Length: 333
Figure 1 (tube, one colour):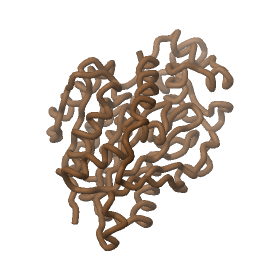
Figure 2: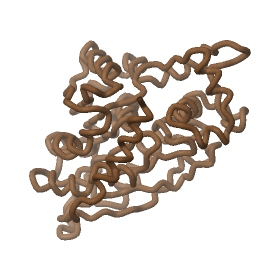
Figure 3: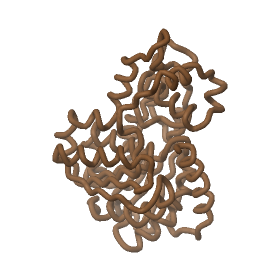
Figure 4: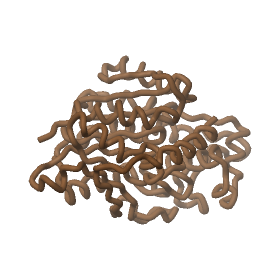
C-alpha cells in the first residue's frame, strides 16, 4: 500500500508539472547546514532549497513577508514536490486572494530516501537544520518578518511527521502548523520475520530496495543510529534470533503519539494548528488517533477528514486549504 502511494505521487508530479507559467519568482538555492556536517551516511550538508517569492517582492524593496516552510515526503525531493504541488501556480492563486508570503521547500532526501526530519549521527541532524540553520539562512538572506508569529511550518506524509515533531520540540520557532496525511505517528513494531528480513538486507539490496525495505532501513538509521556498526551505522530490532525491544523503545521515543504528553505545555502556546487526512488514506487511523490525543490534552487544532487517499487531493488542498490557513494566521506587515 505504501508502495502504491509512492507511485501515485510520482504520477501526480508528472500531471501537475505542466501548469501555466506563474507570476511569482522561484529561486533554487543551496543552504549549508552545520547540523548535518559529519554524518556517517555522507549526506551533503549543502541542501537544495526552493524559495518562492511573491510578485511584489521585487517591486516593493522595503516590504517584509511572513514565511511558510513546507517539508516533502519520503523517497521524494523538494524539486519533485514543487512539481507535484504545482507550488508556484498555487502560490499565485492564493496570493491573489489574500496575504502574500515567502514559501520555502528544503530538500531532505538522504541515502535511503529521507531524513525523517530527525536528529541522527548517521543521517545528520535534519531537525535542527530546519528549525535553526534553514530559518537563520532565510531570515538572513530574504526580507522576512523574522518573528515566530510570522513563521509557519507544514508538510505532507514524512513531511507531516516532521511538522508534528518540530511542533512538539520547537514551538518557539514557528507559530502555526499544518500537517497533511502524516506518517509514522504511532510506535512501530515489527514481527520477528519482518525484523529479521530488514536486518539481513545488504547495502546493495537496500539501495535498490522497494519502498518498504527503504522505510525499514530509514527508520533504523534515523531513530536507532549506531556509529560502531557499519555499513548502515544503525541498530536493527533483531538480535540473537529474537526481537530487540530496546531498539523498538528508541523508535517509540520518536513517535508523536508517544511523544505528545511531555510536550503539551509548549504545544498549547501554538497560535494555530491544522491536521488533515483523506478518508481512504492508509494512514487515516493513526491520524485519527493523533487528533483524539490532541483533544484529550487540550491542544487546540483544526481537524479535517476529506474525500481522498494519500496523494490524490494534496495539490488541491495545498492551494485551497493550506496556504489560506497560513494567510489567516501568520502576522504580516
